[in-house]
Length: 217
Image (cartoon, rainbow, N blue to C red; front, side):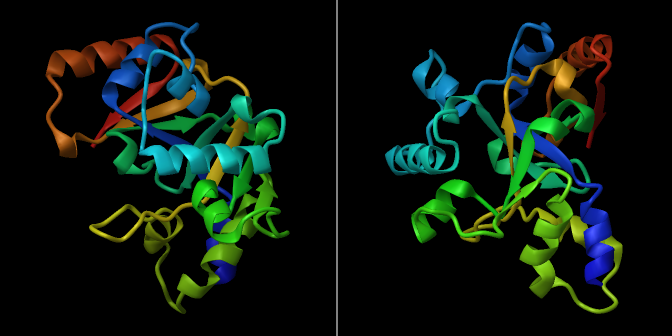
């Protein structure tokens, strides 16, 4: 079963979840970039999960990316293209050929990890993009059961937050800019509300011009 899961994990994609309004901005021009944490918190846009997490984020970044932390963007590995819905109703599935050479994997939420384990990070919790499947299998070997169908793998690799239960995922660290040209597909989940048809049509048109498909689920 571990070999089956590892083979599936090797096909995993890096996915970023954001609100619809952010995707509309990104799709409006090739010059629009997906901001880093520092671009959000130090610019005009402010997205905060509270002072504690802002501090942990900075501590973790200083430990993991010394000297280049302001160039890192975060994603999560997904087998079905759906990202963490707690961060927004849109999932940006990134093009592997645009990020593979500048992406690494991490065992989980790096801010939480550094809070619990402190620095330095032990060996075995990070991987190259090419070896992300080994990292995924090492993390989830305990969750695999004999005879388990492959259809259950996506929910094991990326677990959505449910009530008091925290989400679980393998984090992806990407160095450098991300624009609409870095995106292969956008998945829009309508569970949080019903975007107007005109909004979806306009977004689809913008994405199509950039060679990006839109899937509404």
